[in-house]
Length: 284
Image (cartoon, rainbow, N blue to C red):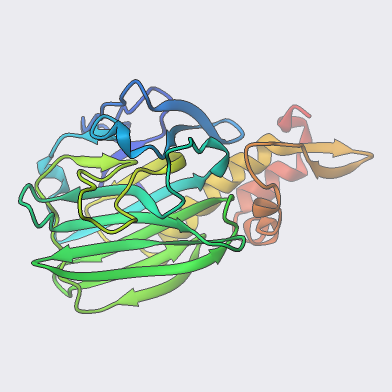
């Protein structure tokens, strides 16, 4: 089984604020105007209202750390766009999930973002900027208001970036000039919004578990991160109704998001199968 702790430099589950549970001490600061919520069932998250007027205090800030500097980096992020949290002044444009940039006026760096579509879809990806050259790696996927797992892999030696959404490999981009940036890492908002594209704005919705690695995650690593998180949610939601396994109601997300993945999760994770077989351990 893959070891998903190898190369882990930051891990937030937001159970105790922005405390880094990887053991590397990369704790963040959550401003007062960022609320606590649940991204699904018992998984805590930070709730952002999409208001750029909160800048610069509307982001979870992570101080610059030498642990982030490497030729490789992987981001694993769970997030949910939530139009229901919108405030009157908030735009419906795309917004920032996580970013890091330089201090100069060009704002070279990168930003992981989400952009809700007119239909029930959302565009998820990463925007790169270096010396005035822009590049965007993205994919439009179903489920605008669903919880999504976004993984971005960055390789500065090969100038390559890869995008994996909900355990599906969607896109690879070659010839990407990746700039790590020297400012604090920002979760939920960009460092600046003046004169920048519409997706350099504050996130609207919830951002849950975040992991950052100084290595490239394998597909096996990503599958384990994905299925472990889904398993926790499914176990918390399972009930026995008339002798059959069913999902409890949860207003925090669309249950169909996980229901249609159940077949994959059960087949790929023997621990989950054993747990389902022994329903006495589920406190149902």
